[in-house]
Image 1 (tube, rainbow, N blue to C red):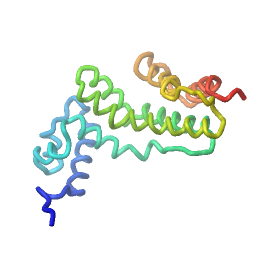
Image 2: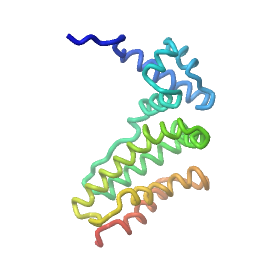
Image 3: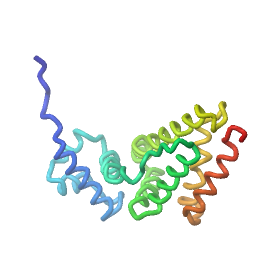
Length: 193
């Protein structure tokens, strides 16, 4: 008979920690959050948090993404172009919302804190890229896209204009922009139709 070491992870405690970190993020911003503050708000010890998460960035990002995941549906309309339009539109609407502006704050914080950069890449951007990859692969299988498509570069080309506007120029990111962005991208990605 195998013995488990320590107590099993409590889902109720986990949820309290994630909720506390998300609430503090919206109230005070990432820079002001401390693990001590999260622990106090959740009614747990710092040790409990560090047992499950390696650092502040990890717990805050998990709290943020747990609270906002439903805002970023994964489309499958039967058309790669339409799927990417839905994905891009949802992402643009989310990123320009008050909740989504946290992402730009985390990107800024990640410029001087490699732990933050690593966590948002692993917990947010890489999973989103994987969704985009699946959309493009489905489009290739259906003959909508070039068979020799460089998927990673295509994802960069599709989403870079969105982040360029959000992080650099401050220009408007609206549905017209997203539609034009996808239309331009697909002019180069399609199978020659």
